[in-house]
Length: 443
Image (cartoon, rainbow, N blue to C red; front, side, top):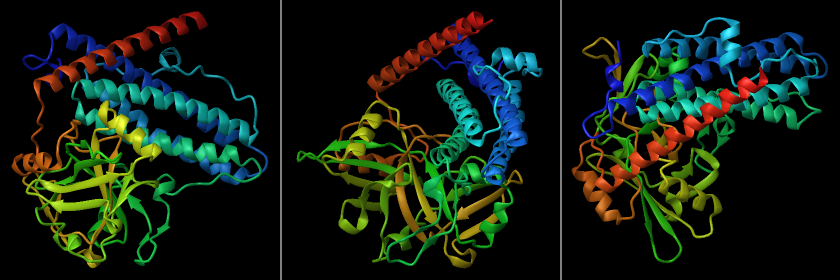
């Protein structure tokens, strides 16, 4: 039986187009599953066979990689295929034939060689997952998008760890904490706050045991994504502004590992009136890519009826700022996010069972607002955004009047989005053909 979410609405294309898109998405998903299975086997083999200097650390790192894929990827990718009414591959022959990675026996027990092989294979898995994300996004399969985004985040973590272990041949590999480098301990300059750990949606979904810590008021930094419109405006002096909603009020989140969450209007009131407020605008929450800051007047924050609005003034000549603008304007970056702490002692939040029995966290007050960030991957369902050159007043007025789930698009934007989706579909078809030809040539 066909999944109803895959049928087009009026004006969105023919049934034939949707069937092709669905077939592309299935192919990409199968490749992602097969690639993940091949990487799992190689990581497991490296875990078993590694020898030499730094054995203990490499043995642990390779073990963490295969355990993550085994526990958090293989079954879940197979289940996503079943949801599309497709049987998942289940034999070694099928995985070998459908994978973009050519399985090879381990030829060395040297830690550096094994780590390099795993990094290269991991990059191929990342490419398969990113292609799958694009397909799922075209079909508005938001549940699949969210899961694939989590896997992409995790494989980027493995890429970072493996690259670090390769770049320091004389040292044992660095086994990272729950997140990549920006999520390690960071001491703020003068405010005495210590970011002991960072908890995002991916961690919550993979670690349901964290709910108890959040309910008890654990001292952690949390990150959330939000439905938002991101707007760009030239200032005439070489600078430009980036305006968006970092958080949306009264909008239920997607499941976050045992609970859902809603932020009540006014939850940022106490944080914003704090005279010592020192919030940064970062790109992808990366402290190495600051964009603006409240203490120097380049970042402004305010509550609107819809959510937390931010406006960052980006200086002229900021190279990665210019790169970000290009990505915003071509639709590659379309979401915003924010990092926060809750008040001590579990205050500022209420936990209760919802009508369907799901645990609901209602946030009424924040303890600290650390950063707002345009980000690459969404985690909430309605997390698409457009970029337009318009005044901040235009944006604020529309935000004040808009419903939390409303997405305002013009006919020209809709036409542009359809053209981009069609171009992306054709590029995926070309990649699929190239991969199939390469497979035939190898055989």
